[in-house]
Image 1 (cartoon, rainbow, N blue to C red):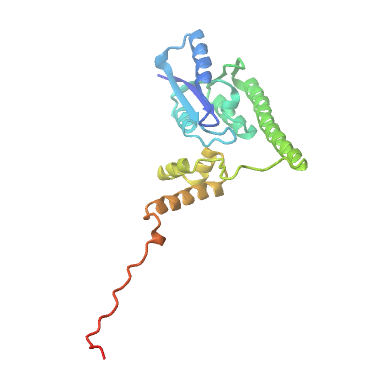
Image 2 (cartoon, rainbow, N blue to C red; image 1 turned 45 degrees about the vertical axis):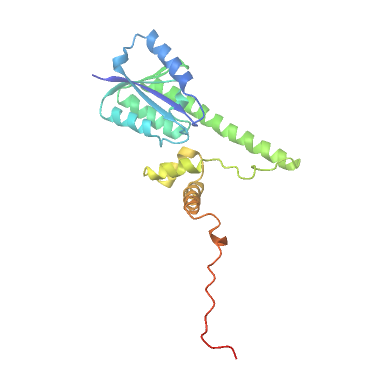
Length: 226
């Protein structure tokens, strides 16, 4: 028996994937696809800039094993926001004879036409990502010119050091941790090592440096007073 794969992705842990799932479930109901033929693959807190995602890896593994006949996603940019990665992925799936469905875009990607449409949509997705970054950079530049840009608040961190430590304990590399948290590799290393240092400091007695040393007793003498 082959399965219908349902792929969902949100970029941050704060985002809710429920809306994507609801739209896909409505599509499944309308097309009469039985629940027992479904497999869900949900990546949470994963960027579309690359393909380093555990559930996406599981999906590609099941496709390689010939267990999947259809891949359904909320929108094509859930698969990738990188033109090259996206086109290579869709072309590989089409060559394997898979049916690929983007529910909100109402498109089935099959054969040569499907590959062409996918290439256009992936290019648009990558362009949107670049435009978003350009606007952010432009806004910062204007704020700096007007003397209103103060940078990040003191103590602000883009990633979560405790989460970084947890991921490292699970055996993930610094590169993988950086991708998950959306930070640089150097930041990921800093989170893990800095967190470890703070944990070690907590294990020390409080005010250890302020504990007074025991004063040695004064030497006694047996000599009689003169």
